[in-house]
Length: 640
Image 1: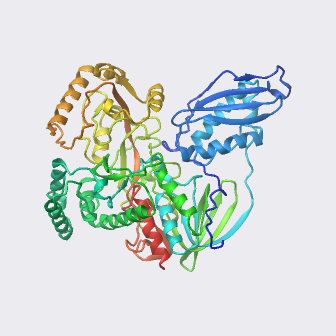
Image 2: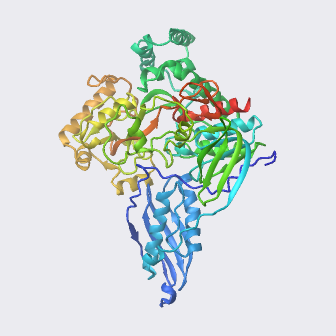
Image 3: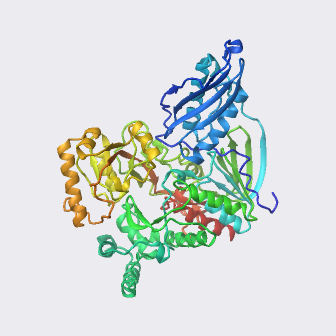
């Protein structure tokens, strides 16, 4: 493997990850367009030669393709328009045309983790085939690949299972420590849930000029955290430390947001609804602070100023300046790897099947790639960073202690593959699990894709109403409470409401697509908006007017809300409403681990030699901040 940079990322094509509930494979039909250039008449071989254009719905927008035909072959396929998440769709855009042309058929395999884009391309090409006079049914019987029988043996110091936030963080840290690292990713792209999560990371190391103003409302928020019942029952040393830090902050005269790792831990314990003690968040805050500093030192550019997000109202969050959602983190990681001398190999579309155990220790993994190649990889350490199980309906129900799930597939915000694989492999070896019933829903997702990427408005700020046009919850409270209340509403459906002040995201072009697909409503009056939403006009207008009064006064007597911003009120046309519903988002429980070493523990509490876990695969750690947990795990492994 050598000592030079060995990313090897082109070896396994970057293929995207389909999200939606259990990979929602309902392809939305195909709509053929007229041929853009018609060839000469005659159908020798089955086609009328020429170039034809077809389209079909992808996850977020129509996928448009051009297909060139000779009289007896599919000569070329080009994707000329698409609108899905870039890292998720790009591998399918690159590989599906090649597969169709090589096979001269439509029965080709879809790209692992990019199913929706792959199917849209196939459906659009099918439309072109019909226009060219070919037989779609006959071509669907051609193209399925035969699995390879090849087997490859490899060696490394560390195998990382999963190339999401925690996996890539762990891989880089271990490689920086001099370890030879192989990363195996079930999907065909790096990024995991970061690509669809919004990409929000706590920026605890933010300098003053990157922090918002410390308003009287935020001071009240800190005092409420300190005076809460949970704080009174928490570790008094931590609470006292926060009090001293806050008093010192006020004495300093600073006008910028107060924060510290201690306050971060107490705030999360008190306000998030996750049910974890302050001690669970202390190492998380420490690791996030260290990651923030490392990223900044290596040239990462943060969004400024920091802001609040749904369910986490203290405005300490940021993300990458470049890229959509969390894509910018992985652009940064790729650039960092390419510019160094780290020994990292990444195998995409390669799923780990089982852990190899010798003399009671984990010494590697068995894996199978999408093309059927089998791998036996021996290593001193295996880091499980394969995510949680929000994409596994059976597992959610098995451990559920809180939610009244409906029958059928449970919708999820997660990308394909977050099905608890790492947890299942470890428990087969006797690993213990902790807090598995602690399952976080995200309340504001569109009801088709179960994604929150296109919701208009200010998360945790804009008002939310039900189908009757009435508010039903404090929009600034935690995700557990909001979801619980949303589940009680008719059809578990709400509407995120905002006005012109929030019209800069998503883009105007994207808004038009959402309007076309019925995932956004727009009107010049509140009455017209209510009519589109199907709400009672009088009730809706009364609700919004009352909300505006509360926002101007800074106090909501109905639900006890007091955090408002200049974006809260809904008063300047045009007005917008995004339909929203809940979906499984994060599993907070996971494998039992040693908090300091990240070693996976048995049910009896003993370490399993050679086996480590990070991020959502283990207990307590979730969200984009899990990359800090992976980074800490990689440093620990490298030091051994």
